[in-house]
Image 1 (cartoon, rainbow, N blue to C red):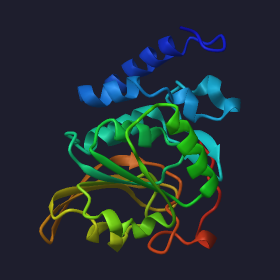
Image 2: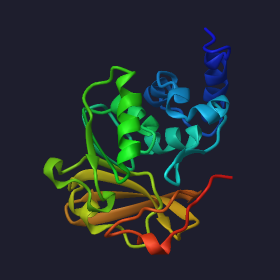
Image 3: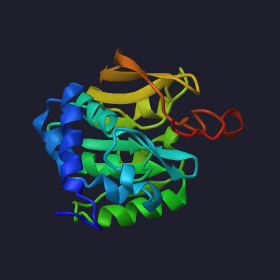
Image 4: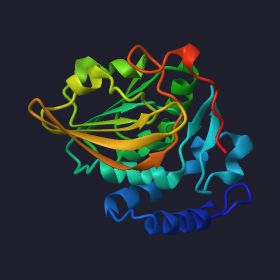
Length: 228
């Protein structure tokens, strides 16, 4: 049914076709995307672009990632439903909502209080199970609920992986997915941990806002990034 004169349902179905065309086949991931109204997580000034497969600004120099990339990254986590998950970079809360439909426990960390509050309000509209919100330095992870079966970083990390995230990852096949590289371009990389051994797999180039923090980029090293 149209909302405010816009048929979001039809736009969503078109977007889902584009997401499938980009290799997302996990039925649970596709259903999580279908059940998460992206227009609720986009600023009103950009709401008419909500179901275009493109990143959009959300304030504080941050973005809501393009939907197909959100779905691809979620699929790469290989969630089965019982995992304890840590998300670094709450942002708008869109990725958070999709993750919460697919795991047992979710903690999400954001360094901007305003974005955390807005995401909390957005997520309240969806009646999801409880989510732990943390305002702080995402490069430090969140030790109280470690170890994590999955860690997802939604900002571009420097070539050296933040050590706290490795330390907080479960040694029993835990998976850490993050963009690694320069401030402008990164390689989407999945680290799997078995005991003290780490195995890396890359999934191609991507471009995220920088991961700022003690174990990431320093504030004076980054410039405000705008999607294009």
